[in-house]
Image (cartoon, one colour):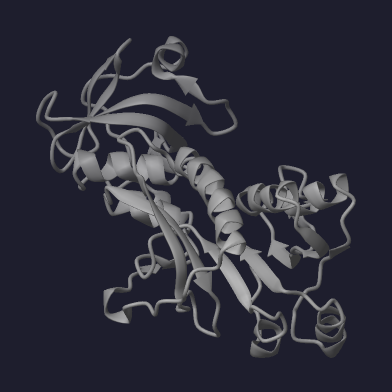
Length: 306
């Protein structure tokens, strides 16, 4: 099949690799322009760009798909279908209409639940027991198109956004190959059941100790690796990378350190306690609490989030 591919992050690169390995022809890959990243803010190529260059594919990085030159170029490729995965640019209707079979999106949720930019993180934050991949026939709306194929995936107790992302990326790659082999009929979404997965902000990753230990644990996992759940200690940021909720290890004002030892830092929350297992000080590296406490002194009764 003659496929145009549009995607940017590692999630999309896994799908592109699977399509190529399945023998599909990809005459053009679209990905976002190089963006500044890292401490030096140097322009970095996306995961999809890196893969496209490795596989010798023709690559384009338009700032928009609305200009006539880009649309004319896409039209001239006579594509059977465009596969889109976490591309990051809106597809105007005239682009959606170009391929013979339209445009298929690999979306990391069980649509219509979690339409939008951050379905993986929102599913963990909400305490969902499962998520999955939806192969969607794209329309002009935000993840509102008809469903072609769907596969569910359980969310494990220890899943972070990263581990769940990796499993979903593999599932999405397999599912899009299956869908293109025998395209199922399109079924309209039930918009009454839709929920919206808003983009994650750094501000919301700040831990609110008045929330329950279970809620905070989900936040720690949902914001791992980006932007990282954080609190403050002695006026400095402290990221929390791994934790576990407990029924209780004492009673105190939420955010109070109850115990500090080799087993972790136990902190009071609005309901239950949270044991911190892996942390990171500003400018430092991630480390388990045992190592962290070797160079830092916590005293029972000391507050976090001051």
